[in-house]
Length: 208
View 1: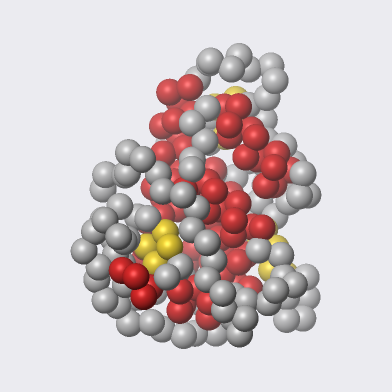
View 2: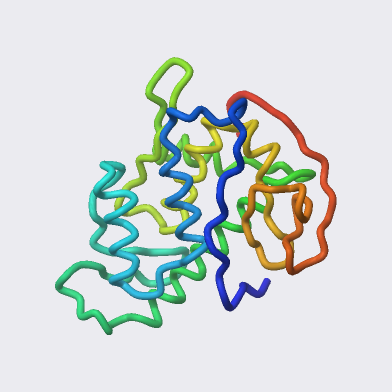
């Protein structure tokens, strides 16, 4: 499926006090939305995204390279020339972004495929502080780039499952993410024909 040539701005979370605790850290979700909404197009931009959203937040160590699927690893770090591997970074980021968005589309009703949540738990890329939570992302440097981004989504979904079941919208045409189903439905966006879907409210650990 073809991706957008121009990426939309990061959507604003709706005001829903009954679903979103104002004192809970939602930076993991905002980090994930930053990646899919304004994907980094260079090694320097990707390193900056890692540093701002994951390394400085204590979520993971600074990675020496990134990988995705069957693509070759691309080195990161100050020893790598800024103009080296730009095309490889773009291709790798695009592949990771597409897999992340495809996973979120599959998570939408009526399919409601939440296996990526179980995969994040079983792979140790999210952890629970105990009791009722909260879940926190803790990806590893050797993880695929898409799995790192999915761990950010997974932690927020595990903490706020009802919020995402009620508000998450992913356009089936361009994969744009939004959180206002009243505008274009759950599977549409302002640029494409909205498609009505049934909102499913669920609780508990994801199915394996």
